[in-house]
Length: 227
Ligand code: ADE
Image 1 (cartoon, protein in one colour):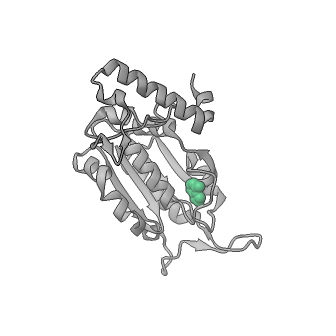
Image 2: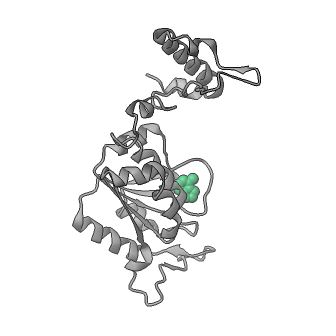
């Protein structure tokens, strides 16, 4: 998979992309992540990529020209399954969308900006608008990083133990059951007896019941999503 991220703040991705599972997935050749600085695609001699809005609103607006330039340049190299724009008014990102996107070959994520973006970008250049939740971030960089992490960890081989991605919370619209490790008794706080019993079928049953109970209690809305 190849992910191209377009941003005016490419330095924001450094720590995220070069750590943990994202780093390992890149080292294993499962994904290539390229972060592009939008300013490299403007013809403006001061590398400015925004301008005043028509109609007199406050703030500056990202211009269409550098965005069109970079998207056109990228499209000459690859065919994209999706060209995504991060925005608080987009479709809300969830595990199903992450699953779907983890099977894609190439995507572009264009990071939105608090100042706004020329609407023609959204009308003509992108294929999907995604929000990571009902709150407003300063820019789309954190949203792009969140999406990239959620997508890449689902690529087969990215996580050592394949089973652990399958048993994630949300993977089947159920929250994950609690997990414990040694010591079995810490200050009198005990690990549930069943987990120490060695009866795998009973343990699996317990886990499912815990998942159901936690989902009903904490996220009943998810149960309505289950077919
Ligand atoms: N940009 C600003 N807020 C955002 C959000 N909640 N999701 C995606 N992009 C954003």
